[in-house]
Image (cartoon, rainbow, N blue to C red; front, side):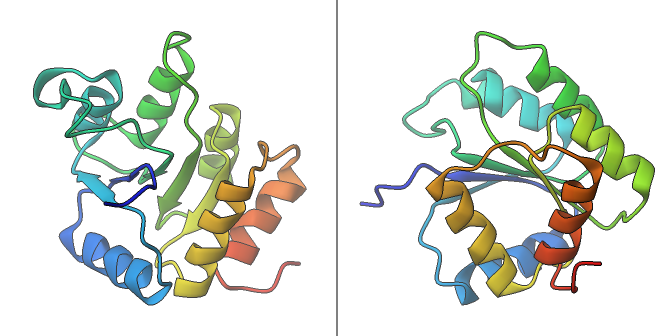
Length: 159
């Protein structure tokens, strides 16, 4: 039995899910992975609503990887919903998106995203990010720090 809480991947593109799973395996990560395909489904999972009501089957995630461009509800809408739910336990959210647009980065940061990772994630960067999360880290404090997170965890030199 795995003792790690699951990670939640919110991604509508099956190719990106495959790439994430492959990077996850290559990084040697043993966390269980739950995948939902759109923003509304992510909210239902986090709220423990609908098919996700059974927390034994769908436990609270220790970390959420969230795409921004999703059907039904966008990643930014999911981040805003999370911020409006004081009764829910906090969950760190890492935006995992193909968008390197500064406005998406800034908006994600404003809505509480911990990091911003540009697809596709390098296996070692993914492992480092999850290990950093397990060790405990706080929100990105400044735009420069957020840019560093984008650069460092996307496998590009910071600068």
